[in-house]
Image 1 (tube, rainbow, N blue to C red):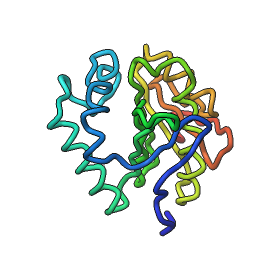
Image 2 (image 1 turned 120 degrees about the vertical axis):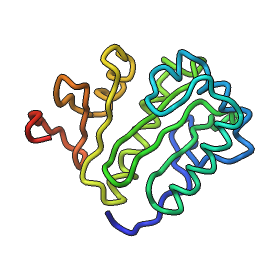
Image 3 (image 1 turned 30 degrees about the vertical axis):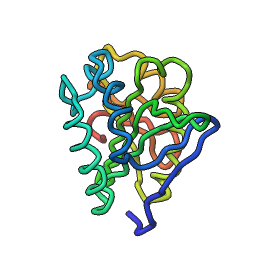
Length: 172
């Protein structure tokens, strides 16, 4: 991976993706803390409280400083309201994202991924991948919309250097 600086912000038509801040905690915790959001996330406890949010902001800042991950809060440009978050683990290109329930189904997930993909490849990652729960059809649709390809029955998706790439389980 290159030594290129991590982006301070990424903009889409409707969103700004930027690092999480302590002053964001009270506004994003109710979104990610809702069971219908948290249940799809492998690394998010439930219930999710203010202390969890504060710990996450500190961890995301530390991971950024150590170039371990790029974790961004997505806020609406028009009012600064958080809608979700997205992150990439820089060691292996794993992508994860979430959207608060009021912000689902209107294209924000696709916008977030389309902004992060070129930024991740610009950092030198050779591939991006994500894993979904078998019944998380919305997330699967978002991944496939932006060009991720299903790899195998284990619900892995991959995007390699911006090109479609079909792999068998043995070559993944």
